[in-house]
Length: 87
Image 1 (cartoon, one colour):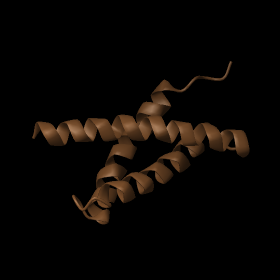
Image 2 (cartoon, rainbow, N blue to C red):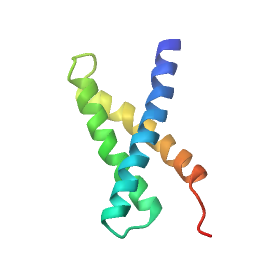
Image 3 (cartoon, one colour):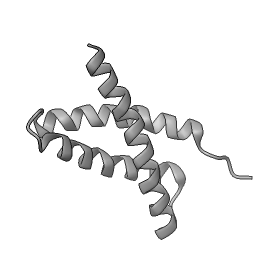
């Protein structure tokens, strides 16, 4: 059970970090609001994370996609809570 909780917390932190990085790059390239860029970044990292996790055969792609989608759901609220407000 501890392994699953640790894996889930790591997935939340990882998707938040890499999703924010992708969102930052997206905002530099295209004019888009911050929450929308977070959503797009998290969708991209969810698919990449599920693909990379299912590549080693531990979990099927659909199971990994569900796992990372749930982690991205929580990551989105972390990103919204920690974003900088416009001055």
